[in-house]
Image (cartoon, rainbow, N blue to C red; front, side):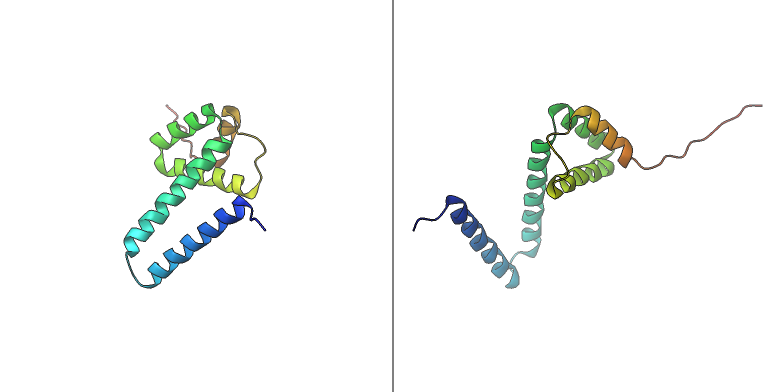
Length: 116
């Protein structure tokens, strides 16, 4: 009985993950393992963003991330979470990204200056 190629790939990933867990339990390279895990998470997040954002939306998000890195990271995490939960149908275009940015933007205090 031949296995499905996806099943074979899944089994390979399981074996790799088990090997990583064994190494981690033995205490080998905790800092390096954390760095590699972070790199994998970042790569996965970028792949999700490429899949669910149009070019215009990605450019707008990158512009926001350049000017406000913390806010840009928050938006990226939010988009990835929405995609993984299945709440995004199709791709997010630039107008939808603009609306999402407005929605996630923290409330800014406005100052009224009156001259006498």
